[in-house]
Length: 254
Length: 240
Image (cartoon, rainbow over all chains, first blue to last red; front, side):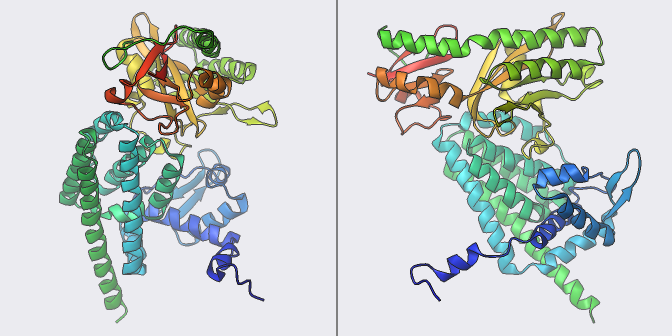
């Protein structure tokens, strides 16, 4: 029996499965992405199971299942006893291969959509900082950013992620911060893949500096433009990596 | 502390104003002595080359957080090599009030998603300013993602041993803890009264067009009479 007052698509969404299965694969994906992009480096130790369950806000069973998958696919290994725990197993070549697979699996539309959302939140953050009159606070953010001197993609992604998160924080909006954290977890590591390339790293970081300078001078529109350019450059790189990855797959399957 | 803008006129001293002052001063009163207590324990422990710095801090902070509902968090922060050799840099605990029972939680910068990316505690205002000025500072209100996800003030003082800067000691108080007490008193003064922090940051505004945490420009402040609340870095603003 249909309820004609409600939109059936909206109602269906309410009853979409929440199941533990979905949580397990989201946790797997997040950890896999982190390993594939070097955010979690070979030999890094993960927090303990209880700590993970607490931080992800899921049950211990869910965490254990996710970690089990990662061990089964040789992304993690465990050590017992003192100094034990789960450690990242992959070496950088394996990580690159993982990354290619991950990128190849995404459709062009998915990637562009994620980038659109990322930009929307970034723009919202900048406009909110400006509306609140808090541009001066960005001087300290700029100081921290300028001092950072990452020498590889993984380190650069950490700096970029830190900057984006810190900016969200400066907006004084809890909601925006949570949205930034969410999109960063879902897509941040992939979006900023381009930071592996030294030249691209220089361009993107220069645009970040421009964004901060323009914000501090009160030119929000110019800041948003700079941020947009950085995202576009990185997006192009991601899409071309994806084309390469798909071509490799086709060649390997011959 | 001087107010921005020209022709700063203070609000006439009325019984309403006096009441407001009293409540704010009372709210603020425990801050210096409480931080002093935290400082002395910290300084004593660090100077004695004590390996029990963390344990001692935990003890005094637990006691403080359990003794009153006003404080949302307290502790010390230090990136001095002597301290880092024996302890974490962030020895701060926050209250988790559940079922009327206070449960201090250690603040681990790694455990808060924002903290994961902190490039340096030294850049943060509540650390940076006392380090530079050698004087107590009130930061905020700002949303304290590491602590309560609410707007809070963080009061910090420099920790000094033999003239050398070691870090800061401080406490957090939510804006809400003050709001509940003074909202109606502000209204008695003016339906559009604003409580300002550090001359231009909105702490509590009866006028809905100004959000807590936003900063007023000089031109906007021109329209207000301002009075400093004695002994604090808070001012009351009423439209002229």
